[in-house]
Image 1 (cartoon, rainbow, N blue to C red):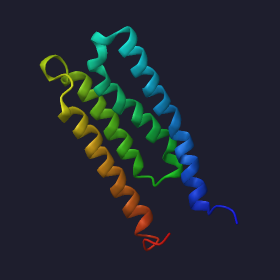
Image 2 (image 1 turned 135 degrees about the vertical axis):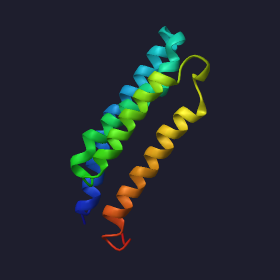
Image 3 (image 1 turned 30 degrees about the vertical axis):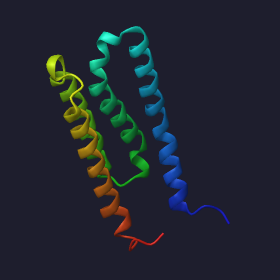
Image 4 (image 1 turned 45 degrees about the vertical axis):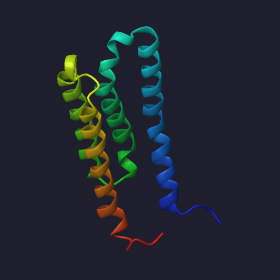
Length: 121
């Protein structure tokens, strides 16, 4: 048999998310290789690129996922503004951006998909 509709939609969402991951890897490689003195910006750029992946996939995910994309964008902007100088590469910058963001995404997916389906696969 074929894949279930939900599984097909999940795979399509992942496929739409991949370009932001590729862009993040490319930006990282270029900065590390050609502008290492600017590497502190990656703590802000990564969440912002991740937000673009969330936005690209949002039509296939619960509507509330939009707010996770907004969070990642704002967290990235905050990291660009605040996580520089002595605070550059602070584990808190990435930890808060991705930790809170992933908990938000997990909560949205659980409350909107898993609970509705009774947790069955």
